Image (cartoon, rainbow, N blue to C red; front, side, top):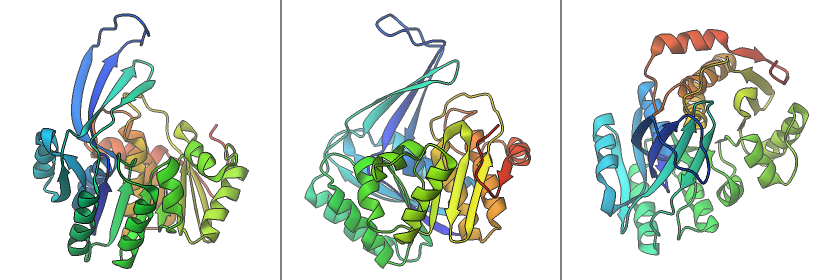
Length: 315
């Protein structure tokens, strides 16, 4: 198996609250509550670990609430290269209704100063060599500029790592300038960055071809229950996930990224890579929390994924 680094520059303590129906402006009573040390890179790391890879995790963590994150890192056996910064890592509240709708309330998090940025760069210079790939996922914390973020990706590429990017907005726009090995935007994120519609298969193909021409090797576009499209040189595949009972959509995209990186690094056939990645994402929405917990269920979901070589909408 591979040795993979994941970077989460803006992690969060996810507090997931389950309720029947959210009624704004009224008292709402929950029927379940769970908290998880999270953030997109950490979520990806947990799935990669369950797939058998050796994982190093890094980014920035607030010193004032380290315990949940350090406990996760120790429990999972991750190598820790997080830089600690003053303040608290943010808390993100996920309000999950019975029909699967999720309302996010994302905290602000600590501000990262220049000294912390330098410390992370120096740590990565020591730790990153020897890893096969790095997954850089999530938003930028306060104090981090888009230009610094692009320099970070350039440095990781210079250290010989394949860079997989899963971000949005300013971070995605800056990251694309570095021509990552793989990018995984959803349709809304991709359309915003490119300034064009990517609502249908033809529009997604046009957008992907632009990114491929700029040097990106793999473009993976997610569209929720409508499926996933994967574009590469001489490759255009679309996968439709099976219908599942939704517990929470949080982490589905992170699970998809992990599945894609796994299949590509293992040199698997493209069809198998996309089928498994789509099934892992489908399994993720049936649970609260991150990782592959039911192998038998995953096998059944893989068998139910519909794959086509030409993009079509899910029926």
